[in-house]
Structure formats: C-alpha cells, structure tokens
Image (cartoon, rainbow, N blue to C red; front, side, top):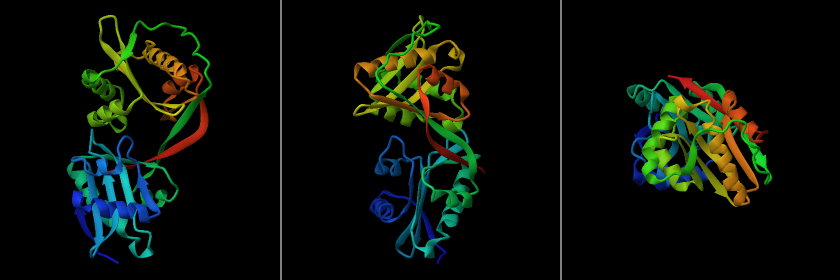
Length: 285
C-alpha cells in the first residue's frame, strides 16, 4: 500500500495514536520522565503520522533537536504486512526536518528486539551500550579516602538554572538533559542534592528516584572544573546514607559502557554490574 499521507501530530490525533500503540506489537516508547500524552503534546518535539486513507498506520517522534542531536522517542507501526513500507515514508520526512534543524546525529535505545530491523532501515547501527550497576543491602558506604571540600544540601526550585548549566557543561550534546527534562526530573525525584564549595558555588548535583524499597540514581553531574576533586564521591556518599536511613534495599544506576570514570566511582561505592544492558543505535545524518 501507499503512498501515505504524512502529517504533523496534533492534539486531535491523540486518541488515534493511543489506539495504535495499544493495538500494535511494534510500539517503541522511550519517554523517560514523561507520560505519552505529555510527550506528544510538547511543542518542540517532532512527531509525524502516516495515514492510509483515514487510518493511522504509523507514528515516528524524535526529541527536540539540541546541540545537533536528537533521540527517537516514539516509533509505532501497524502490525500488518501491508504497511511494511510505512517507516521509510515517515523517516524520509522526519529526516528532512532534522536536516533543516541542522541535526547531525540521531540516536535510539534498543528496548526490544523487534526494533533493530527498523532502526537499520533508518540507517542506524549499534554504537554504544548502556550498562546497569546495582548495590544491595543496608551496609553503609566505606569512608572516603579523600574528603572533598564540598557540602551537600537538598536542591530547591531556585537551583534549577545552576543544575541545567552544570549538566550541559558536563555532558556531550547527545547525553545532556534539556532544561524541561531537568525541571521534570527534579519534580519527580525522591532525592535531589547539590554539592557546594566553601564559597557557596554549586559544582555538582544528583537526582534519584524511589519506588517502594528500590532506589535509582537517575543523574549525577559534576562541573568540568571540579572533576577529579571528590565531588561525585561526596554526592554518592550522601545519597547512600539517605537511602540507608529510608531502608532502601536496592539501588541501581545506568551509565555508558565506555564511561570508565563513572563505573569506577560506582564500583568504589560497592555497585556491581548486574548483566542488564541496552544498546544505543546511532545514525550520522
């Protein structure tokens, strides 16, 4: 079948997209801090829909371009073989919009095996792995060998601009959180703390979530000028004590397999690789 009518998503299409997600086995959603309805309605994201006559047969959404990069967040395709060529039609139009926005790199997490042929169709290939480390039990962290000259306090809404600045300085564009994402994450976090110097300068932050007795370190960022000074270790040490006092049984964290520095930090705090990993696929546009 085809050609398809490719149009931008509008709020009036919300129920049709929900129905397609519910009915299709081929549904990829990587929305992090947002519900699907919230993400779809975000103004700067790029989401296109493919219609065959009046029937929605596919949806492709990417995050708002930032620093020449974006992530595939929504990929849903009708299950029937008749619509096997819907993705190339969607990707051609999305790619044209990304080119106009001067995006050089598009990335996607391989959350399920069925996605890989579709990512391959989009010109993507396996580029990186995200690994998971976990820490179990209520043992306190070992004393730090080198005490960092920072103090730790809970973050407030007024600290968000400093957190955003640190995040954007600490990470490459593809791995940065947008300002909206950090605001959202701060709102949903169980623990969000800052590291401050003696001059009251914010040099690092972390935010973590909590579900029942399981915690997850969702973000840890340190200003480049303050790295290798024990700031990350001080944030980790403080977080572990907070979770121990709340009788959290398991704590997890994700990081890039190639990020040896972060893995060493977590392993010093008795986190161990647990065998769970996700592939990151990328396309150079």
